[in-house]
Structures are given as structure tokens and as C-alpha cells.
Length: 451
Image (cartoon, rainbow, N blue to C red):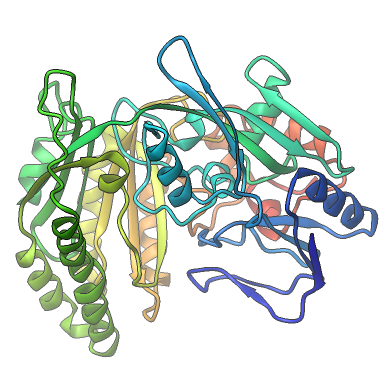
């Protein structure tokens, strides 16, 4: 295990948070992880684990021991189940892009994914990362077991039948019950997605969202985004191919895939990045730049392995706030956001992204107990986000919106406690497994409350 005194600060990807830990450690396995946690706690240090640093919040910040799980990326078990699924146990530090590649080689795939794959498995599930699909839940709903290192170095194994409360509080809980060592995921046979990206007038897209034949229900995975000040939405409709469908991978030859990837990367990162820089220098040009980008959107139609469709490159640095709202409130919420943007003229050269999820029973899931729509707003890192995010947060509060645990928000434990029926249950489990607050930091004290 590599252990060192920290002589340089740590900064997250979005450059919204900085930490100066007293120590850093990179354990190579669970035994070294347990030793590092036990020794730090014994020395009176608080402990936080960090993955890719892709949370926009201070979730990983610590003045004590900062644990990197980057050396823990092994696959421990692959166990087929009678129902056709497979349980795969991996180290918690495994990055999602590595997991996707490993599963693909095994003929397997995640049931659903978000559009970024830089995060570690532990970081993604602990902050509530999700994809889109009206009949699907976030990544935490795919977790079937965890191993958790407590403050005294004891490792506990938990699942739905063995220590179920620890399991619930650990599979999505900001690392408040301990440091995840391994995660067992339920995965499915690899599948192809038929991807259709279709620009539509925003009003038409909103009018067609709901109902049995609506865009949300009639697609396995549906999302859309639009640039503020424009009337065009880019809809993304991804559907799994069945046994009677043409299951040919129509993503093309390797050269064609590279060409399509470069075209996509050019638009989503190269052109967007150039426009963002221009907007930061000349804010009044933002509406015109957004109209140019919206007009440049073209339809695409292809078939490819699921993880190639779900995941997109993200190289333009931005700040993000995302709220989960009851699905039936979505259209009103979007119209309010649009109205505020138009009335204020706030320069926002980044699109608003909308996704969907089924209700679930994960204690701290943003989709707990209700069909959910996600509204994510972004601002270029070189431009001020304060007024925009404050306005959006006020709109979300009016409908009981729940903030993504890994994205920017200003809510505290009192407000969040009113939004989650199992919030106090979670706090009780946290108190039982970390009574001294070894795994606490200022962010968790704000959103979960102090011990």
C-alpha cells in the first residue's frame, strides 16, 4: 500500500472543491484498506474515499485520510443465476469504463447506465448515478451485495437478506456507513441498442412525452435536451433489439465507428467547447451561439452494443445541478425554467438535459417511491452559475424536487429529511455503524446532519 503525507491539494474534476488531507493512501486490496481505515481512525483522523473526483459536491473532501481505490479494480466472481442474470462482484474502485469492457468480453452488460463512465463503481452508486428509462432504476438498484469496511477495520458483508439495513444504507449513502470494498452487481446478457437521435420542436417533444404511445413509455431509454433560448429539442430514443429483430451490429466497421465517434466528439466537445469559450468572452452572443448549435443538430440512426450507445465523451469542463421531480410535474417545471431564462437573458451556453426513471425503494434514491423525471442544468466552468442555479433550485423546491447527491445543491438535512420517507432510518444505521463520525465531512454534515 502506498501511504504518504499530502503535500499538494486535491481538486475534483469540476474544480468546485479542494481538499488538503493530512494523509493519502492507495490500498491494493481489502486487507490493506481495512488497515488504513483502522490506523487513521485510531489516530483521530476522518476518512473519505475518492474515485474519479467526478462529484460536483464536497462528497470526497477530507482533512484526514483520503483513500484512493484506484489500485482496487479486480473482478472477484462471475456467478450465473437461474433467471438468466449474472452476479458479478468487483472491487469498489473499478471504473465504469473498465467494467463495461470486462462485461463485454464476458458477453454481459449493465441493465442501464448513465452517459459518463469515468466514475468508480463505488462513487457512482454512492451518489445515486442513474441513466434513463421509465421502467428502469438507477445504478444502485442493480446492486445485490456490498462489503463495507467500518471505522475499526472490521469488514461486513451485507445484502437484502443478510444485514439488510446496512445494505440499504451502503448501496446509496455517500459512504456514511464505511468504505465500500467490493460491490456485487446484477448484470444481464449483452445486448444491442437501436439508437435514434431525432431533433423535434420543443413544444412537440413535451406534448408527446406521456401516454402509452408517448416518447417516454414507448422507448426503453428516452431522454432529450435543448439549448436555452431555442425551440429545438434533441430526442434520444434507444431500444433493445429482441430475438426476432435484426441483431446485426450496424455500428459499422472499426473505421466507421471511429469516424462516427470523431464526428460526435467534434460536435459535443470540440464545437461546444469553442462556443463555450466564446460565450464566456462575449456573453451577449450566447443566444445566437445556441441557435447555431440547435440548427446544427441532425438525425442519426444506428445499432451498437449498449455501452457504446449509453456513454458519451465529456471534455468540456462545466458545473452541474440536477433535480429529480415527480414525473407529472416535468412540463410545468421546464416551462418555468424556460420562462426564467428568457425573462432574465441569463447567458447559458449549455443544454438542459431531461431523463426518466422508475420508482424504486432504495432509501436515499432520488426516485424513491415515485416515477421520476430528472432535470439537469449546466454552466460552463468559466462562467458564473450562481444566479441560474439558485433560480432553478427554487423552481424545483416548489414541486418537492430532490437534488442529485453528487451534484451542486444548497439543501440541508432538515429539508432533505422531509423529502425522503426513510431518511431517519438511514441516519439510525449510520449512527450504529459510525457513531464517532469517522466517515463524515462538511458536505455530509450538511446534507445528512451531524452525528
